[in-house]
Amino acid sequence: MDSNQDYFTSYEDLEIHRLMLEDYTRTETYRKAIQDHKECFKNKTVMDVGCGTGILSVFCAQAGAKKVYAVEASNIANIAKEVVKENNFEEVIEVIQNEVENVILANNEKVDIIVSEWMGFYLLHEGMLDSVLVARDKFLKEDGQMFPETAAIYIAPCSVPSLYHQWNNFHGVTMSTFAKILRTDRSKKPEVMQIKPEDLLGTEILLGVINLKDVQLSELDLFEIQHVVGVNKAGKYQGLCIWFDCTFPVFSENCKPLVLSTSPYSPQTHWKQTVILFPEEREVEESEPLAFKLSMTRDIVHNRRYNLQVVLLDPDTVDHPIPCSCDMSKCILIKMLMLQHTGHEKTGDEKSTTDDILEDEVIDDS
Image 1: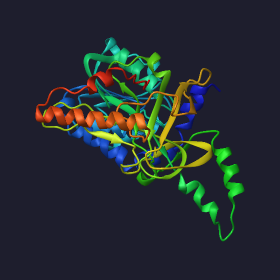
Image 2: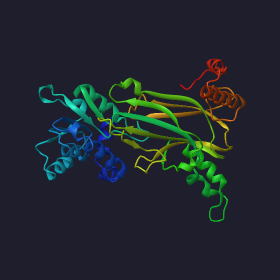
Image 3: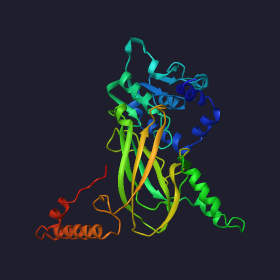
């Protein structure tokens, strides 16, 4: 059995669909994004890529779509057909059991909107976005819309007390040796877990942004960043926390962008957060600089997977962002000069020399 077949077969597990459906934030955000833009869906043709049980297709039909193509490669398509039937949308929703790459619409029909819940852990795990982009290129009209429209990946240094701190005093027994071996073992693969906001040790950094209307498949092969961030409070530096946000399109100036967020600051979702755990922890102090390089690379053999690699760097040897939140003398001086420059601008004073200093600084945030 090939990897694609394994992937589709895994989605025949009803527990997976129950978990997704009962994720209130996920399901309600999609419902609201569709229902709040009925004028966009009314009398339009929609394609739901990877429709699963068909709930998003029903949302689109409820919003007034004249035709919905609900594409699902796994046998869960049979349940989607029953969901469509019991909601009396058989004349609107057509369930197509096939991989979207193999779907052919009559008369080479194009659709006005593509809806899909394609996101995996750390956004890209499982590689379903590939299929969504194939559908976009095959079926979406030139002025068509993508729901969601953009996605962003964030990363921040963190502590993970829920995994390790209990071993300091476990029923009156110190088990630091066990905790150390556990850290080493768990550092071999990303951990999907819920991180509390208070366990973040620094401001989040944008790893990458994806615009679904124009991104190309090749652009999804690698996301990489080298960065320095100042610690915002003392604690144990035990890993890097990754999460994502997805934003839906806005069609009116009166509407605010609707965001589905998996941030530690947002209500919990079934995606939780993804943590890259370190084999060794260390104590860090407030404003201490943390430097690292993170690479997220598509696996050559299993293209639905990504390899995540972190290299911890010496903050003395890499470029810092400007301004930087760390306590290194150079960064403190630059912040002071920037504040001074801002003050001069407000009072109408002569332009300070800050600009000359900043022009000589190299920002390497690639």
